[in-house]
Image (tube, rainbow, N blue to C red):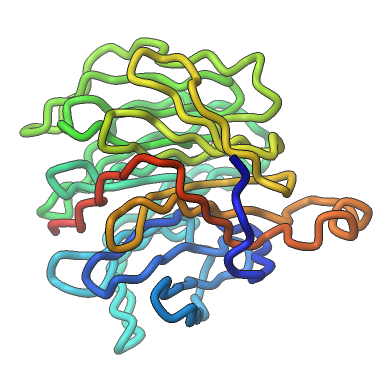
Length: 289
């Protein structure tokens, strides 16, 4: 199967895509473009919001507005008022790290991890934002956090430190948020790309966007890749299920650090793509804090 271009938005670095059931719209971030994008699949209308800083990922709040992981802070954001309330400064002692990938768990807590974009060192952390807005550190020693998502039952957290080229599975206590010792869920060292953002389907499969791999793959619950979606650009970044029936897989892509030759050959780079893969997804839970 091949994903089709849905919106030629030419994001510098599209990422962090999710389906917001409250307004029946798709949302995602252009990290380096410093914009939040939205798309209405019923009408084809799209729009974007200028942001004061780079947005790594974000999620709707159950009480309205969004929780936003900016590059250096975690904050509450009211788009109507344009108000930003910082609740956490991320690794202020390390000038090379920033926040990166994250998703809510099935209880509505946000798990978000960092990356070292200066040196590539494995010296960043993964945090959980609790419903009372306190911060819990889950683990450290991370070079580039990605693929954070949760199985339908909420008792397994998937995660990758992208340079390791594997997706881990952590036992996850849905009530407390405590994690157990991880196992390798899928070894992707022989894949053409690197594991980037992920989501899950209703059958427990994990869908992973392969950075510089021109594809999104489904990893079956047993840990083997059983389906491939070709994406006609070099750098897929993240994916999520959305639409009325949660049967459309939406895929963000990037133009970041691509040569003029690549962009001339693949002008849809940075666009939003979609495909109906034959399975339905699981709706992300709004942040409960």
